Amino acid sequence: MLPNLKVENLSCVRSEKAIFENLNFDVFPGQNIEIIGSNGSGKTTLLRAILGLIRPENGTIRWLDDDNNFNEYRTYDCFYQGHQLGIKNLLTVFENLNLTHNAKGLKKEKIYKCLERVGLSNINDLASSLSVGQRKRISIARWLLKDFKIYFIDEPFSALDDEATNLIERLIIELNTEGCSFVMTGHRPSQVNASRIEI
Image (cartoon, rainbow, N blue to C red; front, side):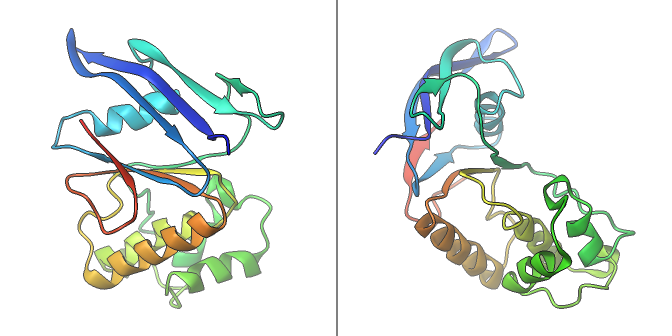
């Protein structure tokens, strides 16, 4: 089996100081990678460098295309969720999902199903009335809008109660069985089965 993504000798520098150097790893279908480190260690920088949002100092990032060749240009959609959830307070639960880029062209029934899958039934409530955990569930529902090969999630388990943590763990396992991969960051290892990289 070929990996969907190869990261080779990747280095990033901030203010002339190396954040991380010569990182190497592959991401295979159905595999999880956890990037573990303290605040400021470069976890978010690594995700953004892989996705081409910032330029690394050195190294190559290569994606597997439909012809089983590796190249530097990604030909399929990935999902990226940073620290900011992007929840709009003046929109309802449904509208927060329906108005995202990934929901374009989807039927309402698909969006309802995504919300139901994360345990959100109060679809007409304003986001401003929701708890932190419920707002997080909206962001998790976005994972399910399309079929992504790789999900890049910045600290998915931060500030969650046990119920929400279990929900995320269950969804990751379900998506793994469909061949989806996760590259996640965190301060400490989670309960998810993953290969771990410390930076």
